[in-house]
Structure formats: C-alpha cells, structure tokens
Length: 275
Image 1 (cartoon, rainbow, N blue to C red):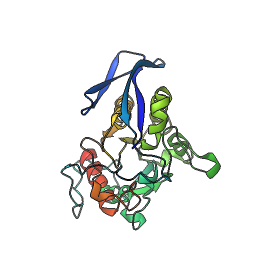
Image 2 (image 1 turned 180 degrees about the vertical axis):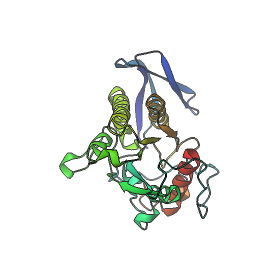
Image 3 (image 1 turned 135 degrees about the horizontal axis):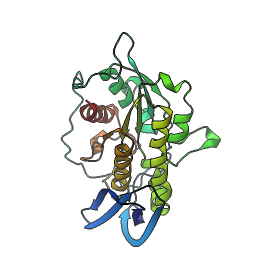
Image 4 (image 1 turned 30 degrees about the vertical axis):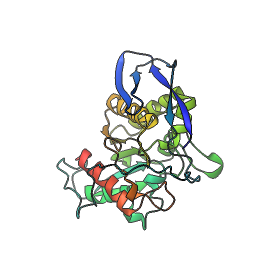
C-alpha cells in the first residue's frame, strides 16, 4: 500500500469537532469547525493510503486484517425501529439516498440486497436512490454523468416530496483529502447546508465514510467532518468506522466493494443508530 502525507487540519473558529487518532503511529489530528475559512497547518504525518478509485484494484496484500467489530449476519428481520416514522398516514415516507458505489449497491446480487434498500424496507420507506459509483463530496465525473453528492441533491425534482435524505460515504475523496483537505471539508459542510436548505422539512441522516481496509487518518478525519456537519445542520449521524463495519470476509472478489453480507452489516448498523 502506498504512503501518503496528511497535514493537521484546522478550520477557522472555536468549535472543536473531533480528534482523529492513528493508534499505531500515536498521532493525533485536531479538527475545528467554524464559520470562517479552512486553513491547513504545517504539521505533517505519514499515513497509509486508503481506498483507491473504484476502477483500480488494490495491490496484493492491501486488504485489511479482519477486525472484530461484533457485526454478524443481518438478522431477519432487521431491528424494529423504536422511533416513529417521519410521516404518519397511509403513504410511506419517501427516502432519498445520495452517495457512491456502496450506496448504489455495486456488486450486490440484486438491487434489493443493497444496504439502502434493506434500510428503506425495514423503516417502511419508499426508496429513491440517486447514488453514483466513484463519486464523493468533491469527486465527480461530469463527462460520464457521475455527480458529486451536492449535484445529486440538486438533481432531484420536487424536493418537497422528500421526507428523508440520507447522505452516505466520502471514501472516494481520500486522495483529495491528502492534498487539499480544506476543499473537502468545505464541500462536506456545503453539502449538508444544501440538504438543509433544499429539503427543509425532511429528516437528514449523515452516514460517514466506510473503508474496506484498516481505518486510517483519512477515514477518521472525514468522519469527524461529517459528524460536525450533522451536528451543525441537525442531521442524525451514523458512523461506519467506530467500529469498522466492513470486515475482510465481507469483501467481494474485487477487494473494494462488499458482498450481500457486507451490505446487510451496513444496513444493520444504520438501522440500529437511526432508530
């Protein structure tokens, strides 16, 4: 696995949003959120490269050691929600899912096996999934019609019909995070600000990044940024890395995406934390 350089990220303002710890390296990354601009400091630490672009296969030996997360195969049915559904009455709530290939369900045996569909079914929501593979808060491929998360939010017509907005992922931004952390942090904040403006009556759920490999500084820093944005804009936050929901035996043959069992584990984590 390649080695990258991640700087200590500081965001102008006084509200501390999280500390990302690299336990092996004993390095702490401080992050602060405020209303001003994002400034990168001058302290650098070496960290392992995380998920590459979706089309690139990992190098031999790059998959993580199995992590004992406590996740098991998806129970049937998923845990019963304890919170009331967003909409009462005859029609189910309409849930919009925004994200990358994990949210799109790439490598799932059927669309019904992807985690978003499992969550929607358990919560009795009508799913509307606009996720695009290989995308992120800043990562996009307009020439191929693949949209960033903010662009996915803007693509939805009749936003007042949406009752729940789920924004998930961010691992495709890890490369950008190493070189332009401020750009990524701004994009995270702006994406949730857009969701709050465009869907003012919807419940917003913020699902942080996942990773098929060992959880590194990139994943923790981006997860902290998502958590901060969720708190700032009133969203429900879900962590997929604390502990890491993706185990080695969840990985598909490509070494990047997950099998149906992996999607079921993600769905279980989401349902448990939003109920």
